Image 1 (cartoon, rainbow, N blue to C red):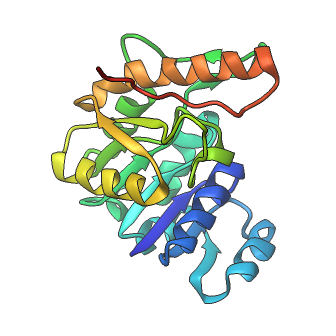
Image 2: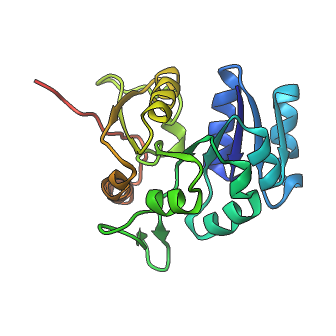
Length: 211
């Protein structure tokens, strides 16, 4: 599978590493291709870098891993037409860093996930990977077992594809419904972030317990 990733920060590179490790081809889209030279070189023919449009055209599946403040411009440069008909995994959280710890700039009556879906009306957007820090996105190892990744989106076949990806990444996944569920998942990410700032460690994840 070809994976196009929009965003060249720690999250984008971590997910890129992970998809390559599973045998996929990855192209990361960025505003500064030069800064990914070392990243692409370490993966050889399995990875490359280009513009946002290059990554959007390349991927059979697209991952949005941009900072929220740059998401709109990244999607505009990528071109909605280049992602039409494709599954788009939205990893973003709408964080406002004007104060610390950060807060949500959108919440409760709207969400980043819904915003992305409106910007990409022809794509199948699935919210995933947003409720954990990037070091644990791939093959998470916790004494209590596999953590839970909650996902949401409007297309069942797209969510099935993302569920299969999450399984390969080492996660249990739970579908909570339509993309409006991002109104719950983004505040859940804030809970993860709040605990991070209180403990100064990112070694935690969520798990749904059943009886």
